[in-house]
Structure formats: C-alpha cells, structure tokens
Amino acid sequence: MTDERLELVKILLKWQKTLYINRILEERPLSPFILFHARGVIENLLYLDHAMKPFVRNDPGPEARWILRLAFHELLFSEKSEDYAATNEAVRLAGRFAPSKKGFINAVIRSFLRQGKAVSLPRDPVESLSLRFSLPLWITQLLSGQYGTEALEGILSSFRKRRDYDIRINLKLTDHLSYKKRLEEAAVAFSEWPEGWDGAFRVRGHHSPGDLPGYREGLFFVQDLGAQIAASLLLPAYGPVLDVGSAPGGKLMFLAPYLDMGEIEALDISPRRIKRLSENLKRLRLPLPRITTEDFLKYEPGRLYSRIFLDVPCSGLGVLSKKSDIAYRLTPEGLDSLRSVQRDFLDKALTLLTPGGELVYSTCTINKEENEAQIRAFLSRHGSRVRLVDPSGRKHLNRLPFHDIVFRQGVYQSLPPEFPGDGMFGAVLQRRA
Image (cartoon, rainbow, N blue to C red; front, side):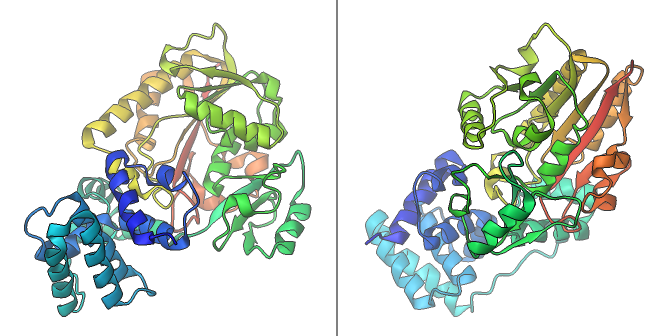
C-alpha cells in the first residue's frame, strides 16, 4: 500500500528544486489524496507559511518545513482529515525525514490547534490579499495598482475556485451533436456555450482528459475558451501563415478546419515542446505543418507572411488557476526581461509581414504592462507602418460568447470573474499597404 503522505513530502521536496508542480504530478498516476494536497500546498504556500510563522521562529530545515506545511494544509483545507490524524501523521513523517524534529513538529501543530486554528491577516488590504491567495506581494502590488484591490480580489477568487476545464472537438473527425452524445453516454458532467460557438464543451468533475470518450481517437483537445477566442483572432486567414510560439499546438488544432496546413509554418524554440506539438497533431490525425525549431529573434526565413500569430513569452498571470506556481518563478527583473523580449518579438514580426497582412499579438497574462502598454508602445514606434484593427465586428465573432465583455477599446481581453475562463489578451495589427 502506498504511503501517500510520504510520497507527498518527496513530491514537495522535488518541487522546491524545479518549481513546476504539474510536470511532477504528470510523471505517473497518483491518488486523488496526493493530487489534492500537492496542488493545495503549492497553491496556498504563502498562506500556510504565514499561519505557521507565530510558532516557527527558526528555520527547521526543508524536510520539517514541508511536513508542517502539509499538516497545516490538512488542518485548514481538508474536510476529510481529523486533527489528531494530521498531527500523528506529521510526527510519523518527521521520524522518517527529520527524527530530531519530532518533538518540535508535534509542539507546533498542538500550539496551532490550541489557538483554534486561527490565522490573523495584516490590516493592509494588499498585503492581506497577497497572503490569502498566496501571490507574491510584489505581483499583488503590481496588479492591484492596475485593477484596484477589490477587482483583483474578484479575479484571484475566480482563479482559485475554478476546478473545470474546456475542450474543443476535432471538427475534422466529429461534430458538436455527435460528441455531445458521447459525453452523455459516458455520464460526463459538462456544459455548452451559447449557440454560435459550437465545438466547445466545459468538462466538470474529476475526469482527466485521457478518460474522456474519444481521446485516443483524436476527437478533441484541451483548450480554454479564452485561448479558443484568441486563436480565432487570426481568422479569416490565408497563407502563408507563421505561428510563433506554436508548441504545444493548441492554436493549430483550433485553426486546422479553417486553414491549409501546408501553408502554415510552426516555429518554437523548444525541441521538447515541438515534440509535443507533433504528438498532439498526430493524435488528432491532422497533417503536420512545416516545423521550425528556432529562436524567433534570430530567424531569417527569406519570405514574408500574410498572417503571423505571435504567442509571446509572458508572465502567465492569466492562467494561475492551472499553474499556481508560475508566480514563484517570476522576479521583477525577469518580468522586465520578458517585456523587452515581447517588444523585440513585435518589431521582428513586423519585418516579416506582407503589406496588408495581419499580426496577432497574444499573451496569457492579465498584466497590463505586457498587454495594452506593449501595443501602445508598438504603435508609437511604428504608427506610420501599422494600425490597430478592432476584431469585434468580424462576422465569425459576432455571436461569440461574452462578446461585449471580451472586446473593448479595440483589443481582446478575457478577464475573470466576468469571463469564466483564463485571463488572455490579443491585439490584431495590420501592416499598412
């Protein structure tokens, strides 16, 4: 029988070195208990450390600290764990990982229980928000300055509550009604979007994508509604098309029914991600485009493109519901570097665009410095050569779910909680003829 808590401590120690919890959890099948607590500890890391702080004055070492974090997560967030069991299990784990800390761990947990598991938060609203949602303070301050504390609380709360995901069916192999019937027959809980956005379903419950009907047949792929809308900004499209930051292939899978794959070039700097792109397209039985593994800023294709989809490196602060640890990999210096790369990507893309051609700038962040500010700066640099195109009136988007919410001031921005999905941004830019 698997010692689940022992496995959890090993996973958390490994995460401390990599900061990529999803990659670790995808390495092999794990129990719901392990998945719940592994994700939960990382998702609530700053809050757990704050709750422990009055009882832990000195650094107890990595093993003891993770054992305490796991115990505090059970005490604060698990309805299935009894207080005495969480305490005893923490002491037992200390015997395996840090025997000299058994008494210390026992004392910390019992002191917390004697105080009724109460956690006091700072009076400053931004500091309190940072701890409640375990978002580093500097990021919370940045976003609070852009949206206001109350609005940011709504955004973060929406991310935290989300426990579902979206799929897009492969229109080359099936249709909306046929796949809907497959979901119903498999007793999968799902919902549909308003009429006019066929081909997408929101899956609810604990079904993994691999367990859904038609996965091996290539009948669907996982793609958030926000990303589906972002991909649709490229339409109507004609070749040649350059898809920058193409892997793992979500945009191509969405666009395949509308484009000639022979006219598409998929470019990504990562061989590992390009391999995933190829695997994903093969599973969906879609033809492979021309694939290029290259640094975009160094790429010299010797041709121009009618359409360029520019999926730039970004902070990822719009996908916190799926990647809660992404904020721990960010630094202020790293964010400045990302903004510089985004600027260079935009300038490079313009040199590869045909007169009259269109460029879609896309991010999965809610940070306005990477979104609206980048576009304003780009137009300031190249306003004589390029113009911003408002995509909201395009025929294929007229009946889009949440049309009036996501299209404002000439750009696309999906923003929870009004929009029930990831936080995405997109701008369509046309090179003047």
